[in-house]
Length: 430
Image (cartoon, rainbow, N blue to C red; front, side):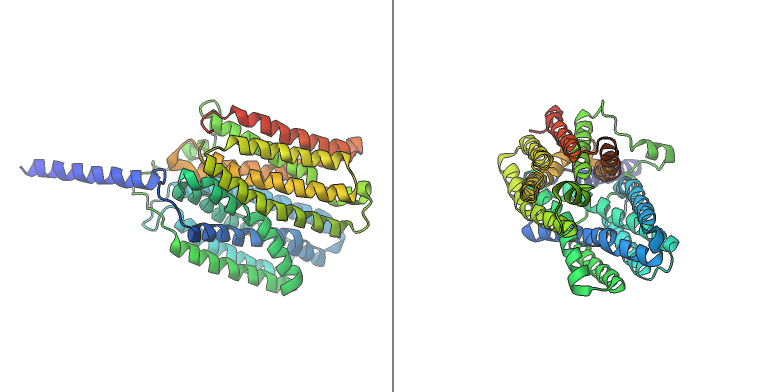
């Protein structure tokens, strides 16, 4: 009888463990409320609020103050180091969070660690006294910030049901342009001090992430649910075989192509306004371009996300958005006037906003495994970051070889169009 009792107890324990694992990994079905959606978007915005204004304004200012003679080469070094740190950290942090069997959940420990490290490195960057220390803290900040981004990316498939994914993704996607605009305004119009700007970003990040961590319902992964850690197997897991998972492969490739078109076209926007459009206030023109783009992007992202959820369709929206992006680049290629540039900015905002609002929802539906969402989204995020480097190099090569912005923008349009066509290869999503 004793042996039978032990066996029954073991059976019950095993059944409970299976149920716990299933609960942690199952596709969510309960709708998330508007307050949670807003807080998730705000958490993402708090991160981009730090990354973008620092990279575009504060970091170049500090580098110039430390060594004006070498500011261009030093900024290129710092930017490259940051991109490399982001490329490496995002998928690794996502994979580690997938395996975390903490009673506080899978994502929450990484959100806390990323927040603390991000806030600390922002303070250290504010007080950096040499270029070397500044770059070191900048690299560590990218590690911390991308740890946060990886965990937050996984929250969408962890928490949001399929019927709401495009809408939620649309609000989350607004975090990048909102972070850029609001952060730039804070730095240039409100705070107006490099050190105080860093402290402000650090404080905002801590407050927002503390609220989000307290609100987040993060189901724990039972101990033993993740396989025993093997360094070789862990590294090998980052290769997602496109033959075995073709939809994931096509989603990665199409995202890479669209982002590559974007960064190839806009990396030299300032020089385009100076050399081809002959716009006298080129720097102000870039700001105007971004404001117009952001304005139409905010509207189109939300509308496309809601319509995608309403009709249960993803591919047609992503395809259409990619083609609209291509049209905007063709406008820049063949209508090189200031009026043409402003119209192209509005069209680009419509296309890129709709793309951001729906594509991430599509991607969450082609992830290979429920127990590796963080890792797989990290791999997808490489398709966002890598084009920043490849696009800049591609643009420089085209301009140097052909001395033609028309060819540059036509190439960008071709890349976006190719991304639109290849979306059709995804079979498991409508």
